[in-house]
Length: 284
Image (cartoon, rainbow, N blue to C red; front, side, top):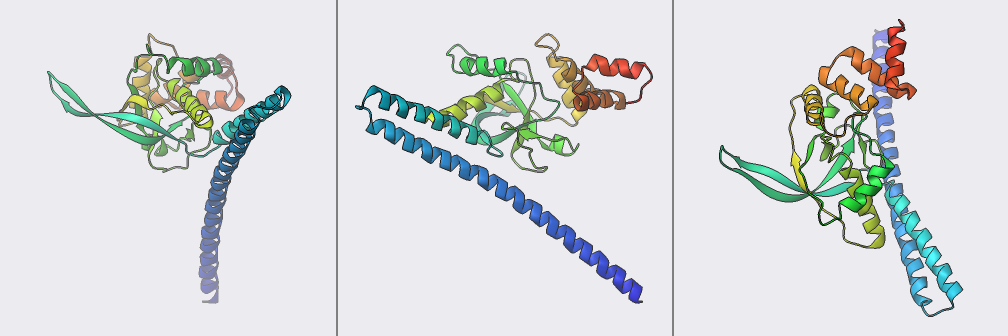
């Protein structure tokens, strides 16, 4: 009898300890997020002070003005770096919702909304060149606002696939209002370019851009998601080796492709090296 009571007591204590640990983890996450926001506010205040000093010395000697200008530049850089660490940053988008679709007519209604954009290891990689050139393109008057498709993050949550926001922070599973881009050759780089542009707009106190012509696309499975991406990128900017393996893993749901992809990620190795390693009889 006493043994039964002790077992129950131990079980209850373990459950309480587990709950306490979960609460502590939540507090740590909250503290980290709050600390990052506090750093942003401090950086903003420092920039305002630096600008005030520059304004106060607008008629001063050249070397004094130069020093004040340098300090403004440093403060802007610090502010930008603080903004790049904020968790779950939002993007202002113009959603196009299909309200009518017949053989002769398709009607969309528009709404502006703040959403969180997230990517996974399966997302197409955005190079520094793409990012920088993209910032110039999205502000060009001739830039065509092609549809940018996104899908709800639940598709990835349900498969336990880790998502990261545009600042590189891990998105907690189940976070609402999160969407993942459906990569296309003319769209995969735009999210990062808009994000970078708008962070700089905050620093410079300029108007942020709204991402236009955004449409939500629903998929019944990750396999369907992978097939859609594969078909619609055939004649465009092709996937690189790692992206091909990742998309093959999604589209086929075959264990071999998934293991090749995961091993390439783990070892940061070329896909051809991983497949040759396997062909020599090694196990993944």
